[in-house]
Length: 319
Image (cartoon, rainbow, N blue to C red; front, side, top):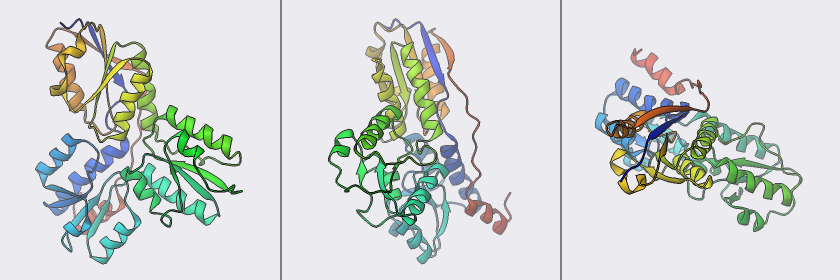
């Protein structure tokens, strides 16, 4: 039987500036051009967001060959391979690039550091869509990807004088720090990017969950299983020795989780809409449980819309 007395909702949580920008870019593209609009890869890694946009006429595809010539395609927030931009241009596909500006920053860093003669090591999750795009900025195999301290130990790049590391934007701060320490130990000359590549929203949400886990018996993270940043939040809570689960929505709450728990903490990944948190909050309120805000920090970052969308408004007379 549930013994929960209090539920804490972490702040900041949920949509980050890059996700808000990407989702709105698809909505606005549909408004300007009408359905269907193609979206290359899930616009963000959340099944509820993808389903909502699909209901409006956004068709998620993985290969540009699925897009007819002269159609409209939105590139997802995670960034894309260089050749995808070239293919879109060659096939006269109208492109709206919703890549998060913080991911674009890493793409640009690759080009700049290569031009300046640096060897680059990329810290990221093998096979993640963001890293695939970033690594495409260089010749295949030129940039080694490391995910763990063991990967660093097995790294064989000689001892280049000019060496820099770059990272995926959605990594665990603590895990990445260990990998960076291993790189610095093996290659004392290695430098960091001018500003951390791990995005501010990822950092803020992890810090909030770390604090939340310290005062909770159970932490629930709203987010889809393929969301890197949501998975990192669950892992962050567990590293504080607090039971934690990642769930897509309220329907996945297991009553067994609530046995012998007094305080439940709730947060959401950067790609999870607020309505999912509201659904969980209402679940507990309906059981007479107090729901409170747990504020660790605040965010007010906003990004301007994709340039191609601004141009399309002018071309099509839309506000």
